[in-house]
Amino acid sequence: MRRLPSRVVTGFLALGLLPLTGCGTEVVGATAATGGADKTIHATKLMRLTEAHEETGMTLLEGPVFDAEGRLFVVDVTAPAGESKVWRVDVRKKKAERFHTDDRGTYTSAQFSPYDGRLYLTDFAHGEIVSLAADGTDRRTFFSGEVDGAQMNPDDLAFDQEGNLYVSDSRGMSEGQANGRVVRIGRDGKDATVLADGLSAPNGVSFDADYRGLWFSELTENRVSYLLLDADGGAASRHTAIRVDGGLAQTDSIAVDADGNLYQALHGRPAMAVYSKYGDRLATVEVPARAAEGLESATNVAITPGGTRAYMTVSGPDGGYLYSFDALAEGIRQSNGG
Image 1 (cartoon, rainbow, N blue to C red):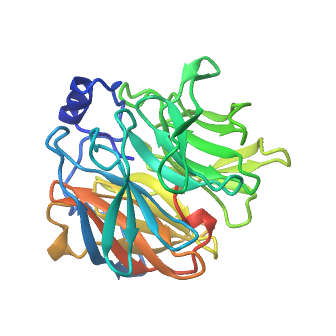
Image 2: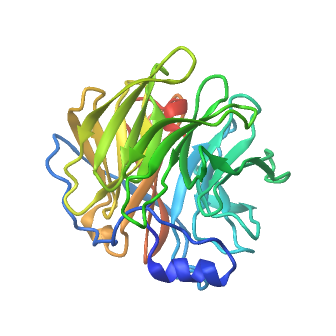
């Protein structure tokens, strides 16, 4: 999730929400360069999902994730109370319906748990992780409170195969301090453990294709790191894996396909950079220039499980959109939400 402009933070304060410490620096135009790539993939507009909200002055789509029936769920980070904070989309019919709203959450990502099947959402502003039943009701607080003496700003999340959560905690971003963390939370909502700290605005987080480790991005460093895990799900080692030549754009969320390729979303440009698991730049997915005016960021992507059709969340002053393209390999859990 990118940093929210000051007018939006002010709007949330007026609505009684906790301040958003944001993700990123000043939003830049859609024509920012990201460096070279062997291949350019032009995404196609599927549908316009949202418009800028009067209360917050913007819309920001995030966290696309498919359920078992093939319906796509998308969160709107800046949706005020009474408007849909979670959308359910039939991508075949290009129809969307409101799925969930409440008077509190500022949701930045979504994932279905392999353990209990519920939809989990990160509430960035309140430092909470909540879950919903399959029909959008029964909102429960899964986790809240401090981790090692500090409350989280949870941004993205990933589940391991047993249902434990791995969360990017974007603390310290508005102050420009490297206070961010990657946190593991047991599937019962207990035993929160810091796996990595001293990070600069950690944002995207995803398991690799084999569940051996985690990829995570640091938005204000344009850096993707790899965190190798031990047999107990703890940190075994960590190293910088990819330095993204983003120019004015910055690293947002991450997805991984069946071949282990990384889809790195870009804040500041409606595009994604695609890398191999060895750091080779394979492609750039972008909104065609003729359609990019009024669009500032591509925040995340979901690749159809078992298929290659991908759906990218794109937002800007012109509204919140879904764009589609053909991914380089099939979708798996690691390319579905987060």
